[in-house]
Length: 110
Length: 113
Image (cartoon, rainbow over the protein chains, first blue to last red):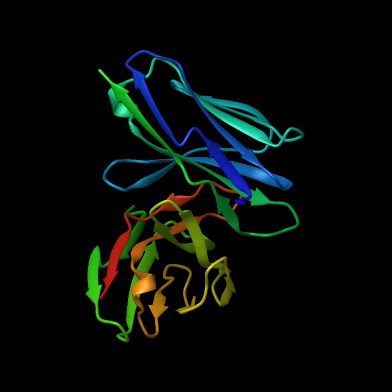
């Protein structure tokens, strides 16, 4: 069982819909990343958070450390949001190793 | 700034051949790392470095060597390529460690026949 699980694996939405992607982890972590992988393959960092909530434009990331759960929300989704969204956890204990979820493929139709 | 660069973009090798995947960053980042991405597997850490002269193994280090002689460069060496090493390889860097914003290179697609 992967230490970091994402759901759903695939998600199809209509333009304008509110999107939620979930990430849960089974070990204690000190930080969690949300990444976006474009259809062309490039990977960009969206958020890094260790508590609470962060917002950037239409994207919102939340984390509940005690419940071992993080969510990525997209408001007013657009076809250009179509991508694979990946969460990655930094485990506690001084490790400098990230453990990745398998990703959620989002398709937003016009 | 060029950010994180990787060369080559695509490579075909025969089983048993060796090669080096290049990764360089011009942001003076201390932390650099190598990942492989396989269908259905997610990204997996191969090796990482927290500074020049310091490297450590990740989740899947077998068959790969790294060195970090300068802050800018972090090459990944395949000593004797195997078909199981067919994958897309990503290099990433951050200012201090894995808990900082990660900057990824464009990736190298490797096919081992």
